[in-house]
Image (cartoon, rainbow, N blue to C red):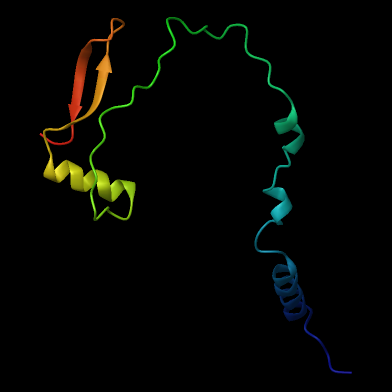
Length: 108
């Protein structure tokens, strides 16, 4: 046989061992199966603060009117409405008596 240099052989073996190791951990190490926990009913924390005050209801505002060329999305519609009607109110906060306290407009 041909004499084999043990130093070269060990380096080649080390390279082979390195190449055999996975570069990334298996996917199961990243996956957490918490399906059973999701099915469990969570008990409320007794120290959690309780809600106070009256329940708030959403009020329906005035319709925008019939437009023949509606934008393709809600975001585009809001942008168009905001640029054409910048002083129009988009959100109004009411106090407990139902009076407007804050009004947010589309533009400045």
